[in-house]
Image (tube, rainbow over all chains, first blue to last red; front, top):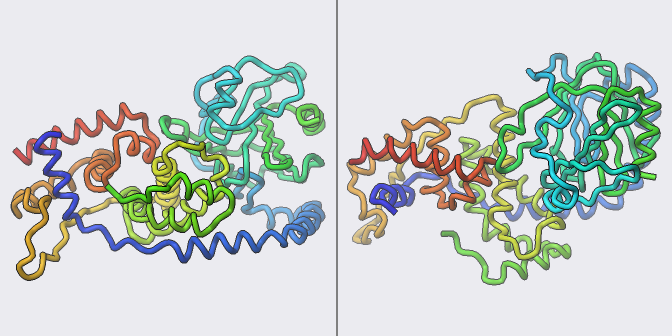
Length: 230
Length: 182
């Protein structure tokens, strides 16, 4: 360590940081709240049914879908999309890897019951690959757990968002471009570059969120989705 | 260096099995460095406190994916720093963290700490002013490395940067600071 670095360390002991709050009471309260929230699961399931019915009514749909989470994905309704550009489907997901390395890096064992490609993309909590279906490229992304904010979408009123009959809860986004952000990961800040996304099917099943994106109509995307998780 | 419980891996194991008391001990051990890291990134105390709190809650939910035997602190700080960055980004502002020296002097005849004795008052003011004049990316790296006490790798994880970038930013910042300090 140079003299300057020693001086900086010395200076650090005199920098006026704000008093450190004791975070334990609030963290404890939030953990307890989550624990007691489990009995509410049935009520939430009921709410999902009601939500599905309300989604069939366009005015209610637009009001409800301003902002919500599905699994590890957040969707937010906006009047104007943030700046973004067209980019390849796998943009922002890092380098292509063989399956074993991708699973090790992501911590997510791939669920894919169709023919498996050779190249995969991985980030903590996320594994992805490009499939070919009916001659078109489709990006499959699988997100582990209930951590929110791995992916965020901004959609304008031009994008229709409607329930899809798949998994425990599914959504179909189509009819307009929306902007997708992947959460930045350590070691690659460029991954936060937003891009315009096309038709997307999102669904949750067990402890996993699935996302399919490509230029396919809803019925074909559902067909592929059911093949993946059959 | 922040003190850590000797049985941290034991605490992590218990927390993974749902023991909130064990997790509280982990919060206590790391809340200081988590808050200061968030403060440097978010730029204000209120956002830093929320980011640290949210980070601890998200870390609890993600404990199942925490690799046994891996160091807990960098993993936690990555989550906290990400929360701090989100706050800064969503508020649409540029954090300008103006660091100040503590004004409180040791009372009575208490001897100054060895660190404080290293710098004269004039040197301290000059160096702090030079740090505050650094470009934001360099000031953040210097603050995390030398004021918060993170390692190069922890700084890289917290900022979501390759460690080579942290190394080069640190070198550039030190070069600028040397002009003021020498």
